[in-house]
Amino acid sequence: MRETNFIIENNARHLWHPMAHPAEMQANPPRIINSGEGVEIVDIHGRKVLDAVGGLWNVNLGYSCEPVKKAIRDQLDELPYYSTFRGTTNSPLIELSYELAEWFKPDGLSRSFFTSGGSDSVETCLRLARQYHKVNGQPERTKFVALKKGYHGTHFGGASVNGNQNFRRNYEPLLPGVIHLPAPFTYRNPFNTTDGAEIAAAIGRLFEDEIAFQGADTIAALIVEPVLGAGGVIVPHETFLPLMRDICDRHGILLIADEVITAFGRTGAWTGSRLWGVQPDLMSTAKAITNGYFPFGAVMIGDKVAQVFESNKSAVGSIGHGYTYSGHPVGAAAALATLKETKRLNVAANAAARGEELLAGLKKLQDKHELVGDVRGKGLMCALELVSHRAKKSGAAKDVVQKVQDATYDAGVLIRTSGVNVIMSPPLIVTAENVQTILTALDAGLAAARG
Image (cartoon, rainbow, N blue to C red; front, side, top):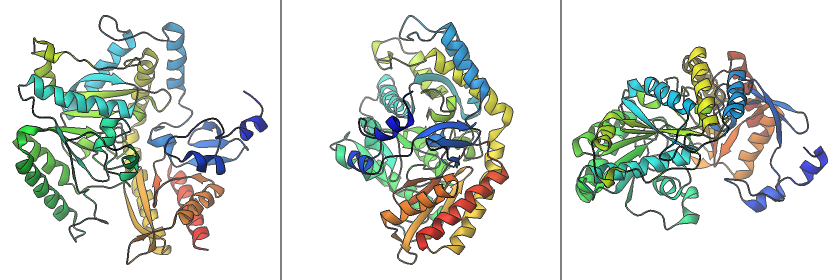
């Protein structure tokens, strides 16, 4: 590694950062993170802060999970790579497929298809959904239904079903045949109500209306996050996902649960689907499957879908899709170790308990700071929405949001901002003391922005 001055001098000079304007990164270079331990990270200047972002929703077990690191080291010595395209596979991947089938059995998911990450997993779900209907004799079922405010990665398919314009506008035209329904959002919605059950029922009626208009036999799948993440941590009413499942079932539409964020305990349940008592047909996972230590993902496939493919004897059932790193043996080894530690530590229970503490503390900050328009969350995924005027719900200015982030960092905690939202997704091993540290630093950040 080159010396510190070289690293600082070349920060953002020769690379473009994801989800950022290249010119802005050059004008205001990003923080350089040099190391991590437990739930804390250390920047290049030696400053240690609590990571309330959890990497990017994915470092559930923190930065010192030795069993996962050892599994990666050992697998690199044994077999650092081999392809899983037709004809070859590897031992850790076979073991992982068995463990995932056991893990996701309550969700009705028994088969897996491996990817390099979340966007890959979403893309795979969309492709398999269309192919399922072709195999099943309904080739005109090609359209997708998604939610506004939903986030489904950055491939063209994922960007097309995304419900946030900032991930779509600069890349249009996108995939045709995508229908967007309103988000189940109590703070901002077109239904003039804050009642979550009423909002869920209204979205259900719109869904039924779209099905009647489009024709059920043209719709392949509904894709939805059980708790909407990057769109601002939008928690639906408990009736929402069961209602969507029922409508899908009645019209032969597959339900894709995008659980790249919510699988493996973040909501306080082992999956977001399980949280709401729903079994999806396909589930996209990634992020926490290797604790963020290795790029890896898995699409979990329901029994109904698996049966249609596995009973087919023609070319239409052949999977013409995959990635060079699908089923990477190092990723599989990392995932096996991560699953074992995730279960041993019962991080879902800790996420539920610490999440209640965090949400309660955030509501107190809302009472204290006029800048906070809304507070929402489930488990250890929480958000504040910052406003310049509470009654009008007008969003806070960009520089104000940045000041909150900077002052909170100065107070010892890294938070994430997205538009007018402050998003928190700390590792699932945080303690009650860690939660108080987050709240104290965020209080300082909000106060600094007000001043």
